[in-house]
Image 1 (cartoon, rainbow, N blue to C red):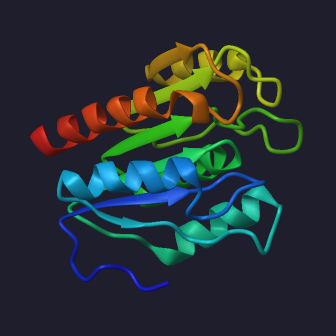
Image 2 (image 1 turned 180 degrees about the horizontal axis):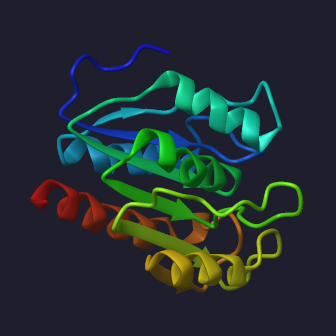
Length: 172
């Protein structure tokens, strides 16, 4: 994957275990990012189901920008959160992040002050309590919404929350 040359503002997405780099949520959020002047990238992690290998892949890409935003859904949320220590993004946007599972339950480090987490109250894959734990530990915003794990039924709300985060990144 080639990165935009000298991007001033870049959003790097990380897809979930069962999805791909340009699923419904990422495609919609990428449009939101582009409308606000951000470059976007969404690496393909489907060659491995190991979350820590995915973190290593993202870190190896070394996405750089004056203002870097990491965004991830489910396992991609884990990947984005765990990459923060190495990549030092200005903001982090997590959707139903698959944090604190046995075997990959390390506490993420380097979480930026601008951090927003969205989780569905009817999520039967990743319990919403995991996002609550993350938000409490890292002082992150937490939006608990009436949705299932995919959050696709609430894509308009998620897009609005993401747009708000990007506006705050641009203002910082």
